[in-house]
Amino acid sequence: MLPYLLFLVLNAPLHAAAPAVPGPGPEAREAYAEGERLLREGDAVGSEAAWNAALNRRPDPALYCALADLLFSERRLSGAQSCLERASRLAPESAAVWHKLGLARAARGLYASAADAQRLAVAHAPEFGPAYCALALDLRECGRTEMGLSAAQKAVRLMPAYAGAWNLLGDLELDLGLKEEALKCWDAAVRLDPYYLGAWCNRAGLLDEQGRRVEARRSYDAALAADPSYSPALLGRAELSFEEGSLEAARGDFEACLRLKDRDPEAWLGLRKVDLAESRPDAAERDLEGYRRRVMDLDAEQERLAQSGRQEPSPYVPVVRGTDTPHSLKLVAQP
Image 1 (spheres, one colour):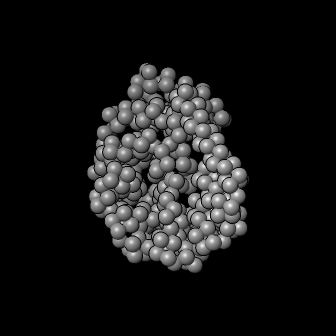
Image 2 (spheres, rainbow, N blue to C red):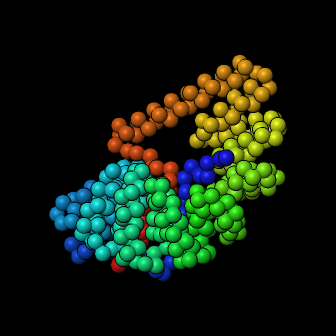
Image 3 (cartoon, helix red, strand yellow):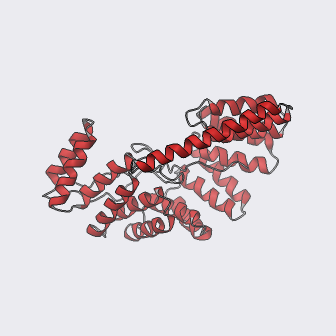
């Protein structure tokens, strides 16, 4: 069965109950505005310097949050987390700061401490739906599935029109063996958001496992109609074609994966299966070598990031889609 997602995007609108990060204090307002201006002009180095200079004069939670956003966007995850740890000590009553800290910890794979931060977020803001989504995800990654299910159910109650909460609830229900309940959740997610690619793939994977291959293919097709470059759907559909003996179709989707920017190495292993099935051992050996090269390239990329003090965010990071990106922690500052 295809893994559900390489990452999970929680497409949650910030509704009225969502708290804002603290606004800058009187001494920090000028530096805050200056850093924002420099960022708008594309001078991230100058912005960071302005905020750091102000923080050296007087710590301020809004400046720490702004700096954390900048560092996170540059994948300097450890620095972003450090800023938010400091912000949480200066503004321990701020649900938004705890939420952002939880996201930063989750980005580094620190799910247990991320869950602790999200618990504090919802303790200070009991109607903060996105924090319940993040808490559910963190608990799931910690293996605390039943507790995660409870958090996801709360998120769905708070945000019934939000596809991301339904998708996550389906994941947790599947973890508990509740397959039909999970399928209903994913059905709800794609009804709410027909472009929710992960939910289409989750749905397809379960339908394939149940032998409902025609329905599974329709789900993969729906995901690829929304985004033809979505590699999990290409890989899933390729595997389905291979299971059905449609080797040419499988080869086409595996090769399409390798033309994408991310060039998922699993596509090489898929091609190898196709070549072995077609009695092409030399081609299969080349496929295996392609897989090795791609894995080594990915390892080298991670090493280069580490040497520069950067880190690729964990594949399971909840973020808000819209004004934010998968490499963002930004929440609106309160004036």
